[in-house]
Amino acid sequence: MKIFALIFIMLISSLGPSIVIALVGYASVQGLSRNPSASSKILVTMILAFVFAEAIAIISLLAVLNSLG
Image (cartoon, rainbow, N blue to C red; front, top):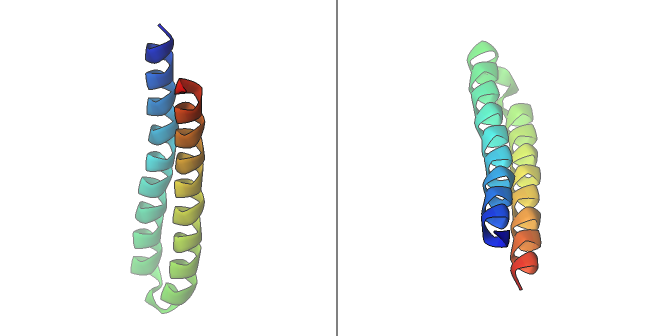
């Protein structure tokens, strides 16, 4: 039963950052289509959002793997 709970936690913890990455990508494409001259500012913000979302995913993965051991 503990394994199923950890699998569910891993699913939730990987689904959250995936949704964030999708929303950031969608918003950046919309922003670039509206104002192409702001591409450098949008790119920096987009990369920072991706990095933080992936960091959350890695930390949650490590927490789940630590709970298995």
